[in-house]
Length: 505
Image (cartoon, rainbow, N blue to C red; front, side, top):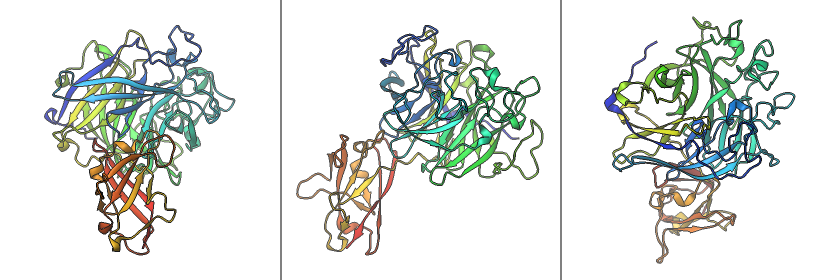
């Protein structure tokens, strides 16, 4: 297996920032103090899962199950963070908390990190939740992967679960337990290893598929030996089509059985960055790497009941291709040493720099320890090191000719058309650059002194939408067309693409 690191000149550390480990997030929930003495409003753990919203400098983060390895009644939550990256500034990287919401189920009952808060079958109906991956949907909601299940949930911007997405039974344990020992063999003969569930989550740039990656090999994939020590190196990536709910599975080969995978981040529709690391920090840290992984030649192993512990894969099975992308312990970055953190866990893209370089954020889970700050690193990636990177596309709802239920437009008469771009949850339509808006190829324009785009609550839901006038004579529509495509970008360069109903006259 070939592993080639990219030149340091193409990947540079821009800087880092920290939030003190004893900071408060301002959330008032009972109990005020957890069983281990940690305040319920402790701000931390969010380095476990971080993702860019596509809007301004706002990021979504979800702390995992809280302090003490699931032994407390920590209430699960989501954070909205403001992260700024400016290599020329006196402080090149900064991070502040903007908002926090508790995570609740469909009935408004709060999720908790307690390992003992499971139901008889360990199903999604229970209140226990260990968020380890988070990605924003194109429509203003977000997805999380739950390590306990593992399960996949869609959550609205206010923290309420909207739906449970299917995960194949082969990933699930039959007998849930409150301790690691209770969930290991012989208690379970298949499914995830205890505390080694779906650690990472990616979404394809077009928003049509989720990719969840396990931290370690499944039990039936010979992940453990007779003494329940980790020995298996063939990990699984789950692909879920969000429209059809059809799944596929791929093999990710670990470099060492004792390593674990903590994150997966889409580069395009078949390439991903995968974070693989050991469980040591400080001078003992020996393996903290980010790999570029390609699924284009990998086999779908959904029908393979068991993978070997090591050695050759079954005939006809091809694993995902791996190339070393960043070694975080490379002396060139100056990070290795006594203060290097153990739990490097989150990956997120950020808006490109003015010079065209991509920005990769790498976050650290501090386990909500008061003496350990929450740390975030920012790396600049030359496009030559990662050609073909595709940013995630946002897809807000649009309303062509708002107020006209027939959505009629008259291109041949050069009459102005209108389009409403609707805000929803995390998706703020007013963050769209008005000058970038094109409806069916036609640009926006002002009419009779009225600005081309106006902020307006079109659907009267309390969120400000964007109402734009379009040059009707430039509409690339013809009689019989029933859909019109809107293309634009946010002010920070995130692409926007949506379709709406239209009747051409």
